[in-house]
Length: 163
Image 1 (tube, one colour):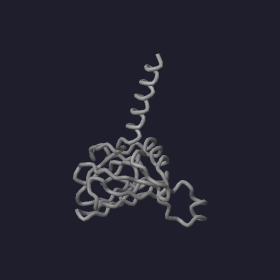
Image 2 (spheres, helix red, strand yellow):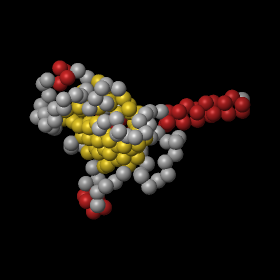
Image 3 (cartoon, rainbow, N blue to C red):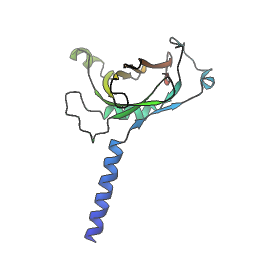
Image 4 (cartoon, helix red, strand yellow):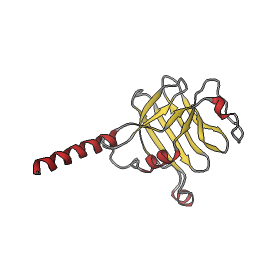
């Protein structure tokens, strides 16, 4: 019986560790035709892009679990985020919270958070991103293979994004 309990404990620990280190993909490709009736003005219309929906509750929960930039980042932590690229593929990034606001301003607006990341698929890629409940998610990827911006599809809607 003791061996059985030990085996179950080991199995659960392994599965839990795998879940924490698994990559995180919160974006789903959507047809732009399905977004024709969205309210809100489109302020950005890139020449080449893909349109995605964002699982906001899961994404927000993931962001809250990220370590701060000053904390040691262990490979076993759930820090991998898949971001959509304009060609339709996803690119992996190791991410962490990286505050950039002056402390007094950050205290006045605690819902605004900023993050940084490093490309895994493309080691030359660096990431800066932010999220707040009013304007949604924005990201800037700078890379030797080309820069990518991810922004809300239309002003006032934080569910859909262009990459």
